[in-house]
Length: 166
Image (cartoon, rainbow, N blue to C red; front, side, top):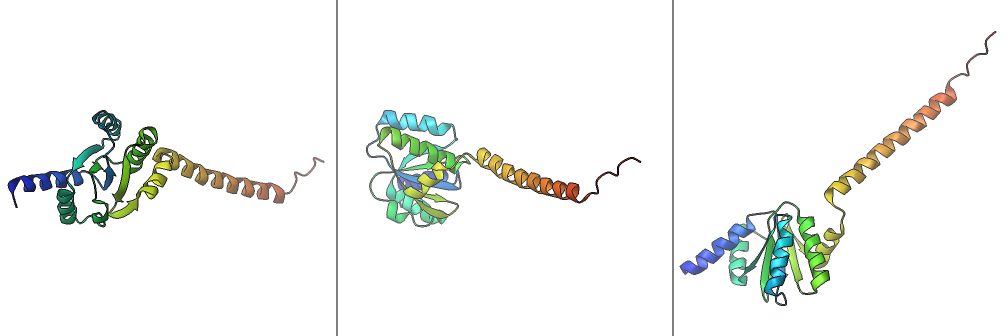
């Protein structure tokens, strides 16, 4: 294998090792200014947008054991990697697509599972993690508070009324 190809494959491997997820996108209609804007938005989540050769990506993905990406490697391909918040990155990509109607998400691989573009859109529609956490804690405390009210009502109902003073 030529040195240039080895370098390209090594570069793609370093991109893929940056996070637990990788999102593949078709960028054929995206202008340079749009890519710059998208990269700026992705910077908020510490994510990166890279254009890669399909053949280099295929070899790097196989070496790292990424499942089911071969079918998506047609046409121009860009990868989005990095950061810890895959849902936040999905939100940014979905919003960018809705605004520009240019970027097309092909597939995503999160925790070694392949997700379609529609499934990634559903992930993007989820509320932020902090909001989900507060909703969950609200459920826990509301149930506990309801239990305490029921027990308190039961105790008040069963306790004998105070005897009248004689």
